[in-house]
Length: 459
Image 1 (cartoon, rainbow, N blue to C red):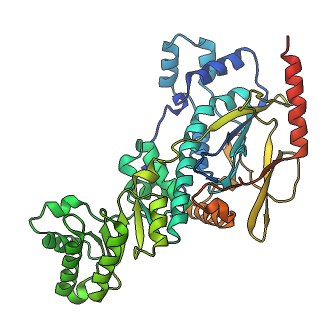
Image 2 (tube, rainbow, N blue to C red):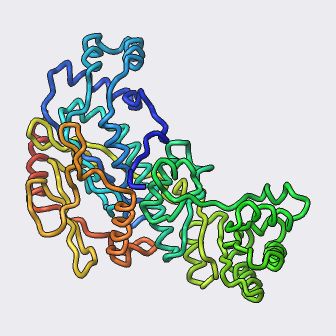
Image 3 (cartoon, rainbow, N blue to C red):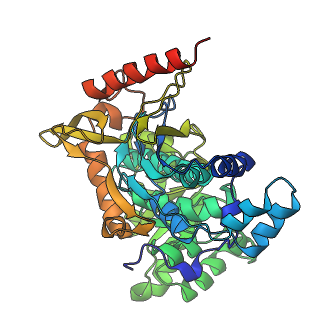
């Protein structure tokens, strides 16, 4: 499927303009009332990495651009705001024709990124840019978090098949749907989420539940009945006893003969390492070398890495809860901050939360296909290396650079992961963080604006 989105399958929210924090709207009225309509630059970035992460994968751009294209206030939304008795009637009238008319620069989805690097920068009249804050963080945060967790699992699996089983325990419908897409960009081959398959073209995959086995009086009959409907399925063998369940699969192979097409067995409990060796021996002894072993059940990157390093004969992994909720790093310190207004660089200077001024660009430098450092610079600068941010929207309209297939994003993520230094690809925290250097010009500008800010705000 070549489309990035198949919109007919996606949940819609006609009043998405209200999916924001109240202070975005109160600031918007204050900007409007004070005739503050000059262009601003807002930068979306992560302040610092979680301790369990050496890198992040940028994800969420597609949903943000769709939101920006369609952003408007419906009559129902305006009636609600009017009923709050907080907003001026003439301001609400102005909102009735509101649309986003700015420019957007962003890292393509699937790009490896690091602290303080802008994943996206918005250049627009300040009120328009301000209103976007909550939605942009919400979408980028969840999807970048999901893709970054999945990337660790894919790296741990070392080219073994990984399937997303997370929908039932992910926090809500929106996250469940978009996480499946993010996981796939990061390298997860398939999802059990059927709607994600319909909406995004992510390959779907699934086996069976214990309940189907339990609903039968006999496990063998359950296997036989399911295989009759789905001859090339994977059979779940651990409802009662995994060894006995596997022997029933072997029995079924003997009964069906040439018609036996079962692709694999799934184990979901017990000591997966020890059990997989035992079951592989049973299958091989029965000359069922083509029947694979698929594992699931509370898996994460550390369990998978242990199984891989022990050469456990497992051919694929179904990963659910711990990938779905990014259990070890369930949030990112992601922010959306003003960097310029009316042609002047702007900064926040509070300790631990200071920001950089001006519109920016990131230049990625590499040696022999391995990334060695990034240069964080003002957008007007030129440095050696590959510029990571590209313009994806102009005057509120998407540009061709923004329209990529899911396969292109997935290929990018694969190449990005392959180009990271090995220390960053390891599951343990790297002794040295990936170097992100601030350009001399941007550093000087930061010092100048900081000094000017102190001067202007001192008593």
